[in-house]
Image (cartoon, rainbow, N blue to C red; front, side):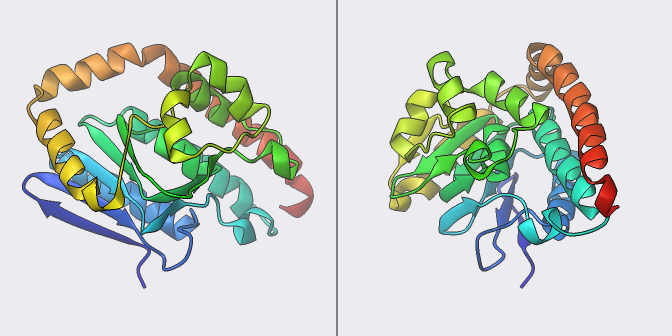
Length: 235
């Protein structure tokens, strides 16, 4: 099945990730996300990005990430470039965390303007340290921007696993609702965001995030250089 669907309804672009499994951020998924965001931006539409029931995204495609060649470095850069794209998107973006959000899935979630989670036995975590990886600079900057000060070290340095409810306190989510309430909540939130003046929203977002975006773009380039050195023996 196609890993992503794009639908416009009542002036809102709904982007749904569903690869039938855990919504890995593969090269194909990331390419389709880029194309969907370009389409929504061209039509000046607010965006709702969501996953399938029970899973938002489990992060990067590990088959690509651990494989040979430059594909791994390309994948990492594409993922972090997606976070920059979402954080600088000209229209409001709402991310619906429909279940687990792990590693790059979590960083993608954190890049939305407003983040709604579904209540349930779900794990929201940056698990890199737990599995022997140093967290990239880009991911660290996104976490630093979003997370409450008291939760930043726990999430980044200690790889703490948050529930949807504790994720609100941590700054990962803005709101948690029951699964059956998600669609109505999205309609209400998006309805409010659509009432914003588009030009003022865009200009204020870029002004408010100017320092973050500059830091993030520099971090993406520094990470890319690091990744390509690290993968040199496989490229």
